[in-house]
Image 1 (cartoon, rainbow, N blue to C red):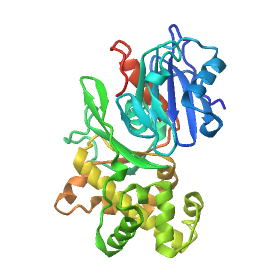
Image 2: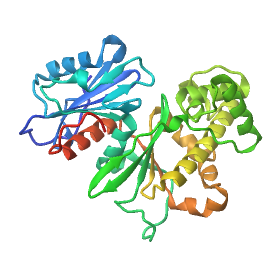
Image 3: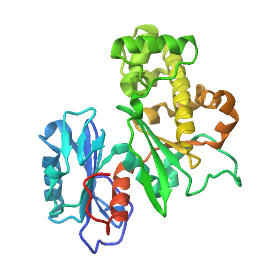
Image 4: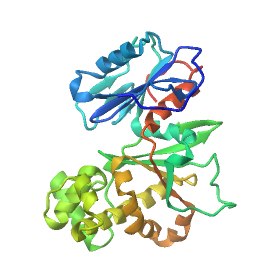
Length: 336
C-alpha cells in the first residue's frame, strides 16, 4: 500500500531505510535528509511474513534499492544491547541479525515511543490538537524549544518517553511506563486496582489505558464484553459506555499528571496511538483536565503543562528519519 507525501527534491545520496514495527503491521519507507521520500511508504502484515528481515528485503526489492546509508527501526517493545523483544508480537529483533540488509552495518533499534519523540520537532502543526491548554504566551515559564517534552502512547499498549534537548539534538529516554502501578484515588479506583491485582498480579496502568484495558474496564464495570472500538463508538449514545469512558478519562488525567511531575515536560505532553486518537473527544468532555489538575499541594503547578493529540500516522517513521540524519556522521551504533 502506497501513501502520499509532499513533493521534495530528488535524492543525491544513498537513502536511509526506516521502519515502524507494530504488533499487527510494519510500515517501511526510505528517507533523504531526514525527510520521508515521497511514494516510498509501504505497509506489510506481520503475520504474512516469517521475520522482519523478510519484510525489509521485500521492501528493498520493491524500491529497486540495493544500498542504504543506514537503518533505523521503531519497535513496539523494550530495546537493550541491540536486541528488541516485541511486546505484542512473538518476534525477537536483533541488529546483528539484520547486518548487511541494504549493504550497511549502521543499524539502530529504537523503542517506538523514542522514535515518536525524535519526530516532535518535525511535526506539522496540522497534526497537533490541544486537549489541555498550557500557560498563555508570552510567559516566563520554561515552555521553550529547549524544554523537555513527553510523548505518551495509548494504543495496543501504553508507554511514555521523555524528550530532552541537548546542544541542538534530541535525547529520548526509553521506558516501560505502562507497567507502573495504577493510581488509586477513591473507592472506585481502589476496587479496580484490587480486581486487576487479582487478575494480573499487579494493577498496572496498561491494563486500563490500552485498548484491551478499556474493554476490560468496561467489563469490570458492567459485565459486558465489547471490543474497544465498538465501545468508543457508543459513548455518545449509551450511558454505560459513557460511564466507562468517564472513568478512563479520569484515570488518564491522573496518570498524565503523575508523569508530568516526574519529567516536568514544560514543552508539552503529546498523546499518540489509536486509542488516544479515538478517545480524544471524550477525554476532553469527560473530565481528564479536571483530574489532571487535582494534584493536592502541586495542583497550582499543573497549569504549566499542556497536553496535545498527535494525529500524524507516520510520526514514528519521521522520528527514525530524523534520528538517522542527526547521527549520519556518528560512529555506527547498535541501539539507542
